Image (tube, rainbow, N blue to C red; front, top):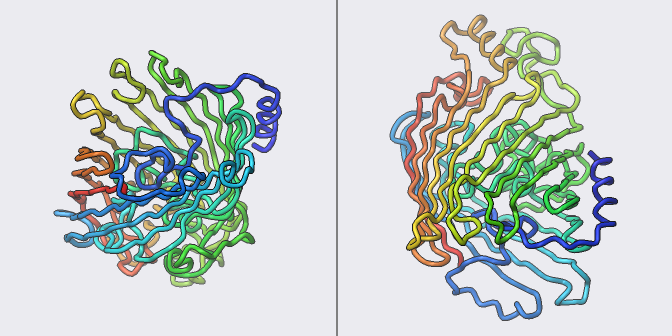
Length: 459
């Protein structure tokens, strides 16, 4: 991947033709709540920005939601959760004359319960804002650009979900896996660099041509650090700034078509990418002494395997475009990913869906989406369940897969204020049962019906 990035840089550096504006600008800081740019966004107009003429802009977003599962999971119930996101963007060219250098940072104030954590014990976390209550720093990085958006380098505490393995047609969905997929959030240490834990690292983006883009990133491979318990407890305030853990490498190449403003044709994009982690990973079945973790003679500690890899593909395509607009219309997406079965809980992942954007002339900012997801429990983890059935209890459940069906409508009350009723149906939460090593080891879990209502306020 390093060779690809270097080759793209050399090609980009000799091109003299500037990029035209894209229909969707992917080069600006993304709000983790909405996927929109924190620089150009529709707000309520309540937050003063007296320093904007000097290149300093503040942004504030609050999300509050009620979620409840009427059936399935560990237990039935309802929760309220909320997240306040405070962001600052600084154009250091305007402020201090530093050419094409910007700074972005944001912090979360998280409160309330978590339905997946408390009630469901599932893979497809039902809310993108679910996290342990805390006030924490999220991203804080500098970005330098060269040429007309040809080359961009980010350095600092970064998230990966807004640029890698992503598609714009998931922005209406409230399930966390429609952003950073369950395969990466479950297989990578501390969930990988994604909400609510960003990681120290660097990301290089090269627009080789107006259609072809190459990205490469290196991140600290365990932003919370090793240890027992929830990673969010080990990095409670987002200020660990770890740089000494075995690294996580991400790479992606993407090709877009019909992606210029005013282009009357239907826009689309395809992406191929992957990760490599250089750390140690626990075997999903065998203990350090070579026997099954379910065996009475097990050491109790899993066998450690060296490194991990995974790959993904993303496809998105606009299938209908409202006349005289760029992004309004109907878009479809599909994503697929795989990873080795011996060291990963999820070895195969796929999702896909359709999004309707502003079809009604009277409601151009409303969105509606339907999506489905699939996360396969690896064969090695299933073999461990079979060992528990043979050695511990004959009725021990064997996990298979978790599925998701979801529908969301986003209704804009006014600029900066939306509400989103949503429904999610979780098939086989946790693959059909809780983790063998968890506090509710081997408990069968029924399909869950989840109803929710979210409101988002951008001040």
